[in-house]
Image (cartoon, rainbow, N blue to C red; front, side, top):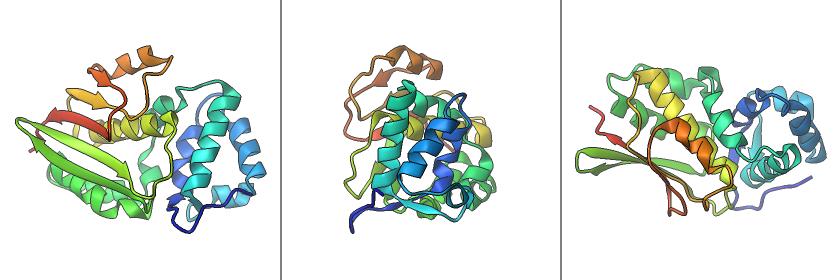
Length: 201
């Protein structure tokens, strides 16, 4: 069983659920979870939390075993309101997209206790930034999932316009053409995962 170190954060198992909705991914995930010592019953329990290092290891394993290196982009788009538990329901009650994002940022640790979201003014734009504070290396699939899920959240709850710019921390991958679905310029090798969009009211 792969355990996290004392300094690792923990992730809600809910963040893995969208990956299970991908065609052909379920069996690989179940096999990887079993090897990591996570039973089906534990995986199905919405209150289960896994060491962040274990979650990233599982993500790498599934991406390699299925050969679908763009798995994070697709899973992020399959994120459902129930996956985010009370965070999305609370954010949905906010008056504006900005307030909804700020609400989600306050309660993010319900799902991921080493993650932080910040909104930074950038002239007429607003930059949304996401970072992980426990030092666990993030595979490209994790970076992809974070951005894709954030955009899905914004569109679902506020009908947000397309972003002006997207930034990913990993190097340009072989599947770079798949980012065209976002309709915005994309840069790789950034210091933080971030999106830039028109300032939210």
